[in-house]
Image (tube, rainbow, N blue to C red):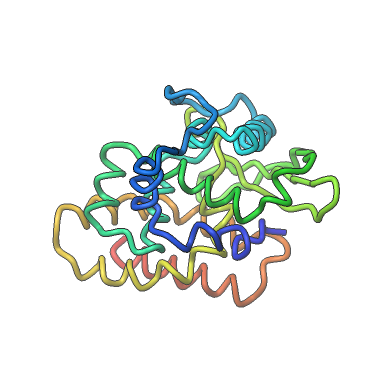
Length: 231
């Protein structure tokens, strides 16, 4: 079963991911509350460790620390679903999207507080190959809830693939922005479109997970079709 992204991202969707970082800083808070200002640039040592470290960081809270556990660049692309400008997204892709990833996990924590605040077990459940990319399935089970699956990739250490794990909560919100992007002939658009090609295997992997409904699969495929229109 996929991770119930529609519920997970409700809190995150109420604000622009990039704008929220500014607001957090202005309020004296931050994505790294309770954590270090220095964020390691590598992922975890194993797929299970990636999930366990994410849970630990979110419960810290240490959202800056959690930011390294997302595949780099994916949080910036996901910000398209929330109305971030093409300039903001391109800049995050070029300069690094750690702040956007930190905000993604901050909103994720709010949306899944009952799940992430509980005792969680994480067990690897084999791999999934998609277009030359290997995804590690990790089944996450809270003490008092339903098991869900995260898809993890080795990207300079193991990290959560946001689109493979949470694609169902993002796909229908991204089609419109990407269609507008296709009509925009700028350097910023080129940067974003190039990076979007990289998430196609992730979206296909998400669509293939057991429990993904026909409607959700169609939304994921529709997003893939828009992305690959320029492929």
